[in-house]
Length: 346
Image (tube, rainbow, N blue to C red; front, side, top):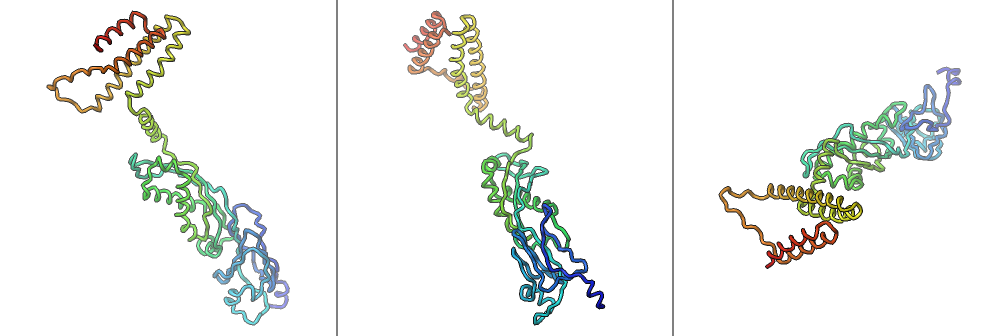
């Protein structure tokens, strides 16, 4: 190099990164043909790290602070460059800055339902959505494993890989844990915490730290959700006979109130409708009961009719008297029913 070339050569005396772009994880300081001046200043701000790369090898890493670059502050570089005894001269080295702040509210979700085996419903397909936050924990490992020699490496460059890791973790956990879908949906926070714990080693291998992972929702595709709603509805009804009795008991006060307000004709119509509804309910209850009852042989003798007990007859009389008092039964109807019941009591 001639004297004029040496004079024209540019030297860097301040290395810093203002991080003026959102979503940048790694940024290489522009060097061109410039060299770093011996004793130059390196400024690493909070939530940043800097790594020197010499001849393709990651050397020293610097956390937040201001450093004067000498053979004392960069001993690994000194070794790689074979400097000795404070040889004061400009040097060339790639310098990469890394953002170590949290990358918040990163979205993840299933583009296609995940098929798992559920002990309650058999094979089901799940959809899941949520968010997560991560940061660079080991800049040298991140440089070696992920970002490499690129001038700029952004969150968008690695986002797809991280989402795939999360979805794979969900499928693995659901397949191995044996947790039913209903329990899974009811304990989303606990499941998210367990998933985060299982994913920590995978993030660490990339030089990253998974700070948090939330599961916003777990659901079934629409066609499976309809089937689940039907099953829940049947479970809520439970014993059909008890359900019919409950509905009838609820209808009697409403019918009495309607009859009192609307006059005799309205009361008679309401009583008739209630009787039809009660008969239909009894038919439904009897049908379901007979479907569940073991079939009897054709030549088996008919079972004897059950004889009402004294307590049942008295309870029926009380209900009939209540219906007469509310005007649902006439005096004549009440007297006829009462006579029939008293004969059975005798």
